[in-house]
Image 1 (cartoon, rainbow, N blue to C red):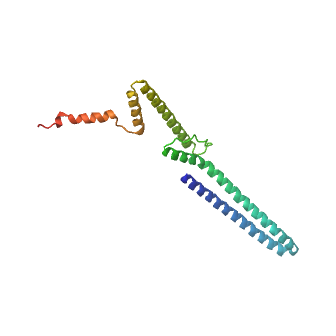
Image 2: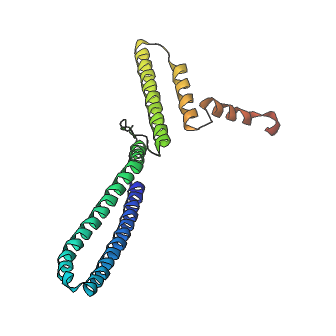
Image 3: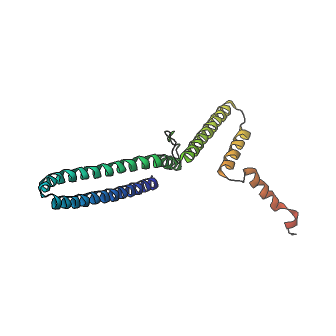
Length: 194
């Protein structure tokens, strides 16, 4: 969750800074054009100078309100974009943390078709595969326990289950492979005469 929060925070800061720059440029240009128009109006028609003074405060407040609307809309847009982009990544990161702690994460909510949708679907399919495999192994072990209680030999089934677990974990060596390595030390070439 740390990475996605950091990236989300940086995107929000970037959008806020850009919206502040746009609002500042707009506000300053509007204010200076108002001041130059007021001075031109006052020099041309001195009677309208009082009227322009009245409208100056109104136009300044309107400009500040417009700047606030621009900043608010950019902040809301940045928040929506960041949440839409990084909510699936936060869910994947939390799920992987739960898997690393040794428990199966709950089924996450839908991602809504964002840019990380294929990664989200891969996580969902990996989670469902792990869940199905664990359920199958639990039922096989329960069946073996029941058969042991009845006196039936389940050694072969347990060995197959161990081999499947070794293959899944990437371990190539099986218990039978270890026994064959020990018998190779009795090779007559390496025997010394007494």
